[in-house]
Structures are given as structure tokens and as C-alpha cells.
Amino acid sequence: MTPLFDALKKYRGVKSRFHMPSHGGVPAFPADEGLYASAPFDVTELSFSDNLSASAGVILEAEDLAAKAYGADHTLFFTAGATDALRTALLSVRGERIAYLGDMHKSFHTAKRLFSLDVTDISSIEEIEKGGFGAVCVTSPDYYGRVRDIPFIAAACRKAGAVLIVDEAHGAHFAFSSLLPKSAVSYADFVIHGAHKTLPVYTGGAMLHVKDAFYKKAREARGEVIGTSPSYLVMASMDYARELLERKGEEMYAKVKEELERVKAAHPTVAVLPSDDFTRVVLLCKRAGYALAAAWEREGIFTEAADADRVVMIVTPFNYTSLERAFSIAENCREKNAEYPDISDIIGKVSVYDVGVYPPGVPLVRAGESISREQAEILHANLDRLFGTVDGKIVTK
Image (cartoon, rainbow, N blue to C red; front, top):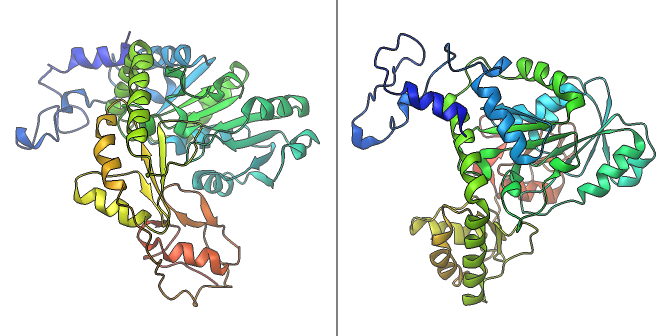
């Protein structure tokens, strides 16, 4: 069943549309451009299409089907990314003392300031068990496919009476294959999924899975967080992707794993870092990460991210057939001397904003912190993909 997708499919033949969006479902560009191929599905809140801010019709039906697929009590849709899902979870526990363990996405730190949250950085699970926190936030998996021991953390939270929020943005696919790690949905009170990151979903598609005790608060918080023009294209793609992977996910991911293992065996000189999620392939190329990414691009292969030593690939049922070609190029990965621009002007100075490399979007230097030489080198080696800058410059005081 795909209730939201089906409702929009029925409407796609309607020609007279005197409502937003103003393209009216009619392609404005030449057909061969392809930009408006999905235009008929791009609608607004109509009598049949429900309202994301207060879902009660086909959107709610699609959300309930997603909840069932993930084993969640309830699921909420978002169309502007996992940022809004995380903000909704945090707003739902505002007033509590919130701890976070390990790296968190920049959206967590901006929410802290936007909502004036009482947030504490902790370094161990033992600090949770001591009590004093109303909520605990962790990221799992991280950008490199490494998964935390969520059952253990959840047990610590229950013992301490704390709500557990897991940013599982990069693990939306876990529910659809027994070969993948178990989703945090089974253990946490709130779980964030960036559906577009690993599922065949349009950019911006995200979900928040919520335990029943927090559902009312979360629905109210979502209404405060999201904009008033959600994308029906994005929502419909989540509805469709969920149904597709429920039916074929096991088969699809088994093929991905089989091909990945074959390719790795065929190219033993290509170093792949250990990962809990086999679909997150991280190649180790000492001082040649950028060079490999550039070599791939020259051959029409674009990767998720690269740094001086690593290249990150998100492998899915929709791109795994290109693994052989990518690994063949990677065999020629060669170490190169790292080159950094002058960094003397920011070392020791205090950063005015959270600054880091995107992706993955985790602040390397937080607002108010002094910048070390090591941090400055990393920032300057990634000047083309920093966040937290003004006019391309790192603002210090």
C-alpha cells in the first residue's frame, strides 16, 4: 500500500490547477530536459492530499505504514531533511537537562542555541547512569558506518530515567535487510532517519520515529519546526520507497553485499576500513583521498565525501553495479604529500561560530573555542566545503 503516492497518482491527469505550485503540473522546460518529469505529483494541501502540519488523511496513513515497517509506535514525515526531525525531537524534551555523548551534527548545536536548551557534553555512559539528565542524545551510525551499542546506552537511560534520542540519520535502510545492523527504533524513544541519505527518496525526505508517550508532544513540536510548504514529491517518494523496500529489501541488499564482497576480493590492494554497515564503504588512501575522488570524477564517478586519507561511498541497490569500475581506479591510489595554505592567522584565536567540514557536518571547532594548529590544518585543507564561515572566511576574535 502507498496511500499518499496513490492519491497523487490519481491527481496527475488534472489539467486545471489554480493553486500552488504555479507550474500547474505542466512542464515549462523542453521534455528532453527532464526537470519536470515529476511535475504532476508536485501539489499542495488540497481536499484529498492532507496537511503535513496536522496529518490526518493520506499523509497519516503513509506515516503509519512507515511506523509499521520500522517497528515504531509512530512515525512523522519531514521534507527539509533530518535537521527538522532532530529539532522536533529536541523541542519535545525542552525543559529537560540534555546530555550528548560523542559527535553530533551541526543541527544539534544550532538547535541548542535556537531553543535555549540546557545541554551538557558527556564522555562516558557512566555519566548517564549517575543520573541528573532528562534526555540523552547520541549519533549512530556515524558518517563512516560505525554503530554504537544502542541497547547498552538505552539500558543506562532507562535506569537513570532519561529519554533516549538517537540520530540514526544514516541508518534509514537498516530496517529492510537482516544483513544490516539492527535499527535503534527498537530501543530509543526518538529515532531520526535521513531517508534520502540511504533510501531511494528525494532530497529532504526524513522521518522521526517516536514512542507513544511522546507522540502528542512531537506532533505539536513538528508544527512549530517545519515550514508551511512541504514537498509532496518528497513525501510521496518516502511512501513509495518504504513499500518497495518492504517487498524487495532483503533481495536487493543481498545482491549488494554479494557484489561488494566479490569486488573487494578481486581488488585486494584497495584498503577498505572496517564498518558495521557494509553499504558504507570507506576507502583508505593515505594522503591521496582527494586525488582518488578527482580521478573518479574524471571517469564520471562521484563519491559522497573525501578527505586527505579517506573516500566515503554510500553503496545502494541502485548504484552497486559501478563498484567494479570504482575499485579498478582505486587500485592506482598513490600517497601524495599534503599541502596546506598558510594557517598562522587563525591558530590560537577563538572561533565566533561552529565550524567544520560538510559532509559530515560535525563541528570541528565550536563557537567560543580556541583553534588549535591541528584543527586549522584540517579546516584549511577543506576550504571548499566548510560550514560556519562568512564570505568563505573563518571568523575569529
